Image (tube, rainbow, N blue to C red):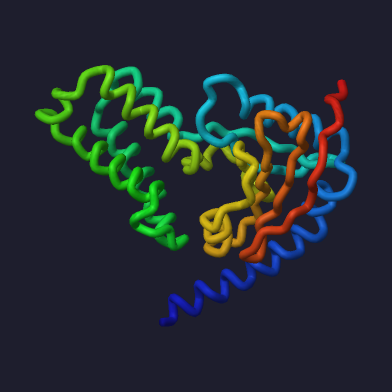
Amino acid sequence: MVEEEERKAALDVLRKVEKRLVAEKLRPYFSGDLSDHIQNQLHFILDTQFQEGKYGEIGGYIVSSEDSLELKIVENELCKYVRKFEEGDTSREVITELYRSADALKQLHKTSNFPEESFPMQMLSAICDLTEQYFFPEKANNQDDDYRKKFAHWYKQYVLDYFHVYNTKQFDPHYLMLFHVHQNGTEPSLTDIITNTKGAVPHLVISAKHDYLQEGIKLYMIHSGASELLYQGLLQPKKQ
């Protein structure tokens, strides 16, 4: 009971800091007329996101610079393990990370009240079951290269595209917030919002599709346990 009260008190303090940070430092840079510097960074992030053959949502952290903000991309650690698996590495380290991440996403979906019978939940359950097979050499040895490649394809679609595993050692210790891209142009998910409610770290969602140069983008700020649409419109051409 005491620990719960202390945790709640600490979260309340973080919420106050978050509210001030969003109002004074973050919201002004991502609403209204976006600066050339911010727009150039968004162009770079989205160009990277929509490279041919790219899986997973680009993400990272945001830090303060002299007169603006810097968006720093950090590779999703899960990509590294998926690549190793595709190349034939079925070691316990690789399989454990693939299973842990798929199961963690499944639990997040449950927290977000995804129905058990929904297609995403059924696919995640199947992926967890298939991943478990690789813990047993006698079963894993029966899986050929084609099977492994098909499984990796499913994993990219239903786990890697929705789950981030960041090595926070790569983060600047003074980072202000996190960001990631929704490459299908969607709003922040309930899972995104639940993550914020647990940690009080503001999060920028860059929502766009492949044709963002013609159709524009949306910028959402997740803070205080909710999402706020800050910007909707076209990006100006990149400036040197």
